[in-house]
Image 1: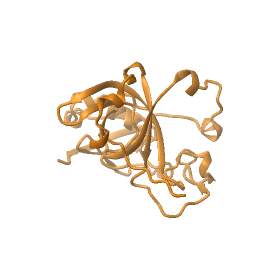
Image 2 (image 1 turned 135 degrees about the vertical axis):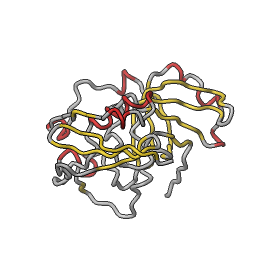
Image 3 (image 1 turned 60 degrees about the vertical axis):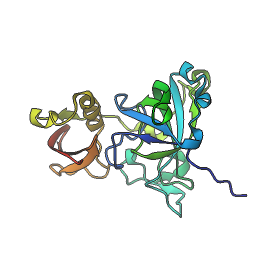
Length: 229
């Protein structure tokens, strides 16, 4: 039996492409997102009671990574992109069904937006702009939180953050309210794990701007900011 599911909403974020998006939700709380429902789901009654929760689960589509064939193993970025692990032991976008799962914090539930009806403002999202969302479920702390859970191979990979330097002339090109989010995105090291070439210039889109940067040692330096619209 084939079951078809369709998006109930789409999310709008600062990322127009995959590059630069944090690898997990919640890593950069300053990142904002707006969930806009499809017309047939714009009923405020569907959000009744949601304001009593602080976080929600988003079930969504890796819309830029949908593939017809799947592999039982993938190469997780956390392992440098050279070691294979079972696809079901990873959060890789390359899966039999290209579904993602993210936990985000609710900032505000607007029941009657003048144009879109009910809208949810969230923080900490790791989704690209326009990502289709298939379902929303409340995060329930007593059931969803497991402080003693094991992290598998991900717990054995040391976390590190880069020191970020943004010259004042480039920082001024970023809206003030989005500067801290950008700094934390950069500190997470947006580069592919298998690309650590010193001096190479990388770039990604953020908040309508192309951000270019270089990494030398543990220091990331922004070397260009240009508007893309």
